[in-house]
Length: 455
Image (cartoon, rainbow, N blue to C red; front, side, top):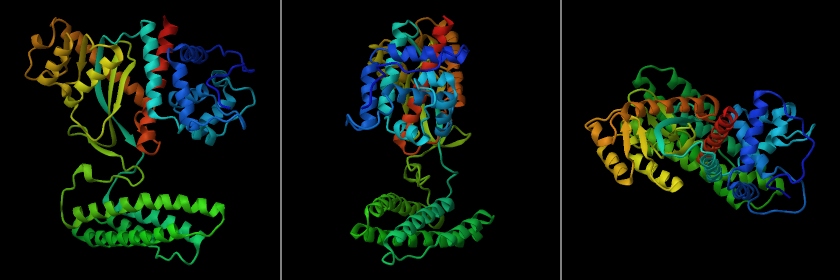
C-alpha cells in the first residue's frame, strides 16, 4: 500500500556536511511543514494510483518521495537514467529521498510514477509553498512583476517535406508491426525509401521550380500511405484471433494509427495548399509536428521564431514565482494583465499594491483596470501615450519599479539554465505543462531553502 509519508524511519546516511546537504535538508523541512501539504500528497496518490489503493503487492514510492524525485530531476537537470543513478550513489540524495543504503530504483519505475502526476497537482503544491512563504514573511505578494518567455517543445525544425516524410515513415513502421502479427491479411506497399529519397532531393535542390515535382511526388506518396493505413486500421478493428500478447500489441498499433492518420491527412493538405495552391496557411491551422501536434509558432518580435509555447511568469520581491501560465497560441502580452491581476486576487485576496511589467503589456485599458482594482502604482517599461502621474501615486517610484522589473529577466534566465525551461523533452501538452509546473516548484523550493539558510 502506498503512503503519504514514511511512518517509521529507515536507515539512511548521516547528513553530508556540505552546502548541498544543508540545502536538501532545509527543502525537506519546508515540504513537511508547508500548510496543506497532506492534501496535495493525497492528490499525488490519486494521480499515480488512479484512486485505487490495494493492501497487497510492493509498497512502492510514497507520495512525498514522488514529489521529491520530480524536484530533484528538475533542480539538477537530470535524465531519468541519471536520477536513478543518483538515488544509489549520492549520500545527500539518498538522505533526502529516505532511501536505504543499497536500494536502487530503475529509471522506468521513476518515470512511470512521475509521468502520472498532473500539472494541476504541481500547481497546488506551489500554492502550498507560497502560503509557507507568506507565513514566514518571505513573500507577501504586495509588489509583483511580470513578463513572458518561450519554451520549446522537443521537435525538429518543421518543413513540409520533413513532415510528409515523418507521416510515411511512422505509418509504414506501424503497419509492418501489424503485418507481423496478423500476416497476409495486411497488404500495403512500403513507400518509406521513396519518401526518404524525395526528402533528400528537396533538401538539396536550390531552385524552387526544380523542387516542385519532388514535392508533388512526396505529397502523392503520403496520401497513398494514409489510404493504406486506413484500410489496415479496418482490418485491425475486425481482427479476432491471436493470443493475449498479440492483442496488446495490436491495441497499441491501433491507437497509433488512429492518432497519425488524421495528422497525416492534415499534413498532406497543408503541404498541398502551400506548395501547389500557393496559399498562406494560418498558424492556427498548421501541424508543426506529428509527435507534438500541440506545438505553437511563437514569433519574438522581428527576431527569432520559436516552436513551442508562450509562458507567462509573475514573481514577487523575493523572486519566488507567484504565477505561471502556459498560453494557447501567441496572444499579445497586453491581453494577459487582467488575468494576472485576477489570479493574484484569488491567491492573496486582493490586487497587489504595486505592479510592473514589460512595455508590451502596456495599455490604457490595463492601467484603468489595475487602478480600479486597487493597484496604487503600476508601470510599464514603455509607457507609450501615458503620463507617469496617471500610473503612479508617487512618481518617484517609477525608476525603482523599472529596476525591480528588470530583475525578472534574471529569474527567467535561472529557470532556463537550471530548471529546464528552455526546452521540454516530455511528450503531449499535459506532460509539457506538468514539467513546467514541476520546475516551478523545484525553483521556488530551492529559493526558499536558500533564503532561510541565509537568514
